[in-house]
Amino acid sequence: MASRRESAISVDSIAAESSAIPQSAPPAPLSKPLPNPHADPPAAPARPPPSAPPTGAAPAYRAAPQSAVSAPHTFDPDAQYSLEDYEILDTLGTGTFGRVQLVRLKHLPASRPDAYFAMKILAKSEVVRLKQVEHINSERAILSEVQHPFIVNLRHTLQDSRNVYMIMDYVPGGEIFSHLRRAGRFPTDVTRFYIATLVLAIDYMHRQKVIYRDLKPENLLLDSRGYTKITDFGFAKHVEGRTWTLCGTPEYLAPEIIESKGHGQAVDWWALGILAYEMLAGFPPYFDDHPFGTYEKILKGNLAFPSHVDSVSRDLIRSLLNKDVSKRLGNLRGGAEDVKNHFWFHGVDWRALEAGHLQAPIIPRRGAPGTTENFSKYAAPEANSMPGLRGREADAAAMAADQYAHLFRAF
Image (cartoon, rainbow, N blue to C red; front, side, top):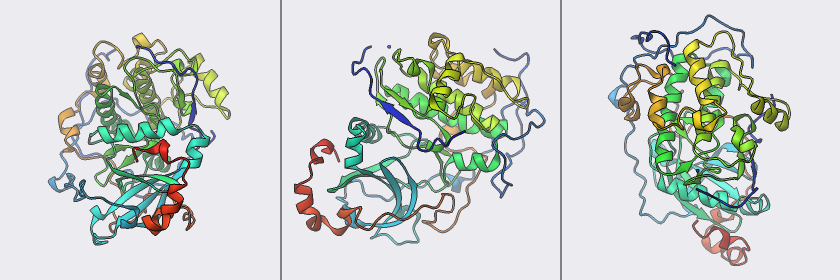
């Protein structure tokens, strides 16, 4: 399967917008603490061999220690920070038209964890060339509005003569994608923990009339406690009914997006089903070396499971991957409550989960503040690629001549 890291697509088609089994007996919850599969496991193949079928039971997750609950951040939202206030450190990731850098507020001691942030840097010229201006402005607007424990926090935004910048909380545990690839696949109880956090986050976004549209392991980070944080809102959008923009990652696209029938909130529940399958199996249900081959398989809908995936998990995934939007779990009259009430989630304490009071199944390695050991290594950015770091006065002439500044006024 080809790498998905650079394969997210966005094609503006029609510009118009318009208005939109239970098992026979409940499995007994587990009572023992969850294992931590992060402890230096051996590398696993992309398609691991089947193992003994895991149970479909939900574990009774034990409470997290009080010290594991996130402390309040000392970032001053009223301060007028500039690029000069940040020290650029390691590169956390790269993308089609930008990168994410670890940065530190210079006035805070390096020994303090809250001195570090993730700075998303997007080259204006590339954003314009790829016709992503609307998406970037939408990402900024939505992240400025949403506030949820399982969504990354946007602190503030900036721009200089070359780039726009989004400064967000640094989430040090790395991508779930990396943890999943290291493990090969996740056990049912580990998968359930992450999927449950996402049910809560998706429910919250949908109540804010926001559809996310890019759910995948690469866009899910783990914080220091092992809890999920959704990042990269480049394809998120405020939608009251339906929209027709073709965007997302091929393996995760719902049939209605591919067929340009107009889509709404139901696409996020479809993507959640794909994600649950990939976590349990180690690979997505529909993939091909070419995107169009992937689309054909999605539209055919031949869903096959590895033998180790239990029947309760299969029922949940089939319900989320229903091609009929009117019958798709999550898009019915009960909305997210229908998903939460599915047999697969039996035993999950939703309130304790949202409050961060449960022990996560994977606790990321914790080094000194500002370390990036849970992220891949990337080349450093070019010294002149961020002119604003030299100071506002040094970049003033270039800013005055910037032909794209008016497109990013909110920054």
